Length: 83
Image 1 (tube, rainbow, N blue to C red):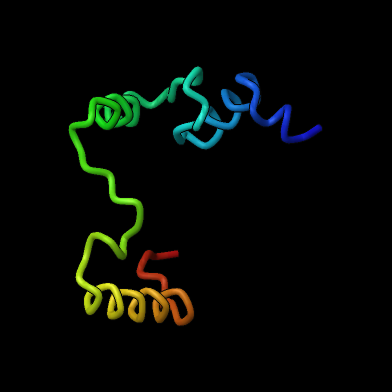
Image 2: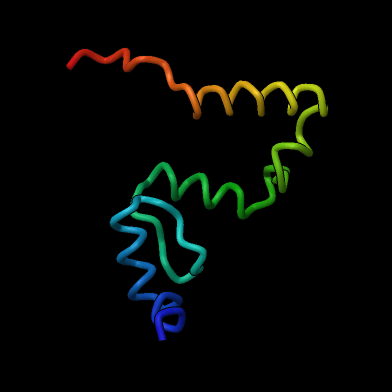
C-alpha cells in the first residue's frame, strides 16, 4: 500500500533529502540548517501561524493580489535572465 509506505520514516527521509523541504513526519529532520532553525523557532510558538493568506490581509488586498498573481501565472513576463 503506497500510503502506508509513504508515511514511513524511510520514505519521508528520502523525500526531505531530495526536496530540501520539511517533512510532516516529526521523526525526520530537515538537512538544511537554516530551514531546521526555522522549524525549531516555529515549534516554540514564537510566531503566529495564519492558516490562510486571506486571513492575514484585508479582503481588498487579497482580491487585488489574487488578480495580479493570476495575471502573472496566465501571462508570464519574458524571461529576464540571459540565455
